[in-house]
Amino acid sequence: MKHVDIAIASSSVIVTTGLAAILAKLRNIHVTVKEIDPERIDEQLNKLKPLILIVDPLTIDAQKVKELKSTSPSRMFIIAVYNTALPVGTVRVYDKTISIYDSIDTITATLSQLLEEESDEGQKVLSQREKDVVTGIVKGLSNKEIATEMNVSVNTVMTHRSNIASKLQIHSPAGITIYAIVSKLVKLDEIKSQLPI
Image (spheres, rainbow, N blue to C red):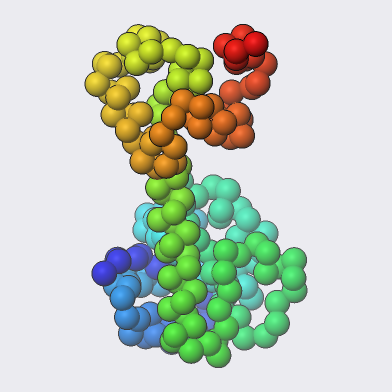
């Protein structure tokens, strides 16, 4: 069972306590709910670092949501809980939306989608050191040369290569090269000299 920290920021006691009660009933997801004072949201988010923040758009406006996303030290999904239609421009700011009229099943499905996105992202994101190894592979360097360039052991490079293959499901230097070009880790001009004529 997945454990998720969720924070709720709303000036409405009914919305906050109602959501907390519904979230406590969710199946397959163990939730820890924290209420956040909208007036102290920055300070409390820095302390709590929830994976999911549920906000009332009437309390926390779209501009503040953009600011929270850009300044958050870790990945945080933001869900709007609404009771009337939201303008399209406002809806785009949020990762998901839920209505106060949604069923528990709908809310569970919404949270499950976010958790799947989060686990997919976590598996596919390369660390900076793994990106350095990819760049070395694309340049045609051996494990020993990559290790020397990065100032690490050959075993560390081999571990990074294994993690890269696992995360990306790419197991050949040619595949890694294509990934590096598409992901803009290297420029085509940088590797042209190593391409067969």
